Image (cartoon, rainbow, N blue to C red; front, side):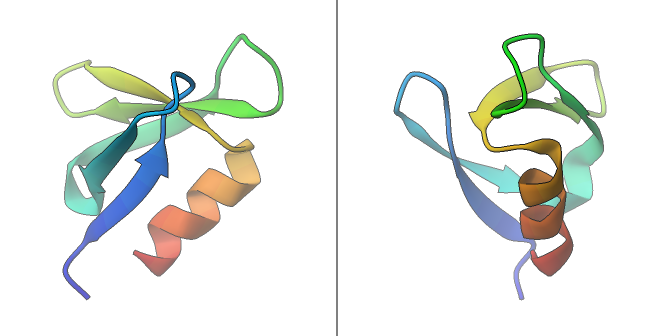
Length: 61
């Protein structure tokens, strides 16, 4: 495993996230189908997926 995972943003773009840089994940205000992935300096990405599915993807990394 290389610690990189691929997520789809709410705009339909794909981003690659380094699992080691993630500080926390929270549910985004848009509902249960979007999550905010926060990085060490306060930057975050809004990605498609529930909190459980995003956490599972990060754990499997």
